[in-house]
Amino acid sequence: MIPSENILHALGALGDSIQKRSPELDAIIHRSSVHNPWFTKENIHLALQNIAIHYLNKNALQNWVTNYQVPVSAPKNIGLVMAGNIPAVGFHDMISVLLSGHRVQIKLSEKDLYLIPWMIKKFTQYLPALEKRISVVTRLKGFDAVIATGSDNSARYFLQYFSNYPHVIRRNRNAVAVLDGNETPGQLKELSHDIFSFFGLGCRNVSKIYIPAGYQFDDFVAGIKQYEHLVNHNKYKNNIDYNAAIYILNKMPNISLPHLMLIEKPEIISRIGCLHYSYYDQTDQLKGHLIEHKSDIQCIVTDSIQLMNDISVVPFGNTQKPALTDYADGVDTMEFLSKL
View 1 (tube, rainbow, N blue to C red):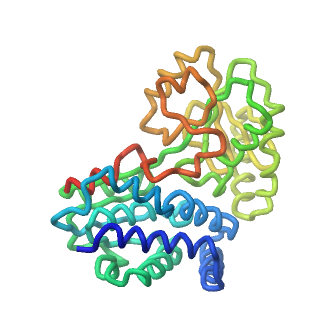
View 2: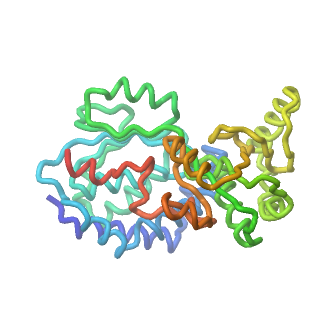
């Protein structure tokens, strides 16, 4: 059994490698950006820096692990089906399996084939004994439990296919923001990161805002202007143009900006390049609505004191900076793994 302290040391060294950068890492980033145009170099750097700062901090890792009874006494084979919506999005699941003492089989997303293998290579250089506990496979087999992340459609398939095994199955979710009209220009600029980072493709990206009756969008539009450059990205621009055509043909009212379409719709999840909004009158009613739809919400961005009393919220600009304890879909992965 590999002591947790040794794994923590190897992960900390990986964090240092990411922070220092190297020609080798630059080559991997370039290869990933060519393979998947949504993975721009800027977005890959952002994802890796967030991992290095928030997941690979040695003290944070140590404090996190001490909350669980790990490593387990009887290691099992854990299958991971990773998503590919943002760069290296399955990293947290992988280190959770390793630190809990289990073995991991990784089924990479076709959209993200190079970043996770590079990270595995780097931290196993510091701890070669870990190599025997990690395998990257094209098909899961001989597993005892599964953690799978994907769309609503793939989640239905996962639930059917893995129903006889202990599992954590994740589906589509997004973040929402609740505004009261008193946000500062700085807060609205921070909110723009929550909306546009990774082109809005992450489950923690804000896809809908709730605004008070009579809300004027002028300050909001000014706050998100810094992301107008996204229209220079071919795939993002194609989505903007397609959505504009759909909404115009259907005569759906919208606020059309160069880099975003604002649509008044009740749904939480919006199309790429679109942001839904709904008006609210009373905070208590809104609170009830958010609780009712919590299965569609990954996190809530707000500065509202009333909401903060009862609902866990994220400060402006922090949705894409999750801590080790900010579990996807609110499911404690480490607890699941430690009780297998």
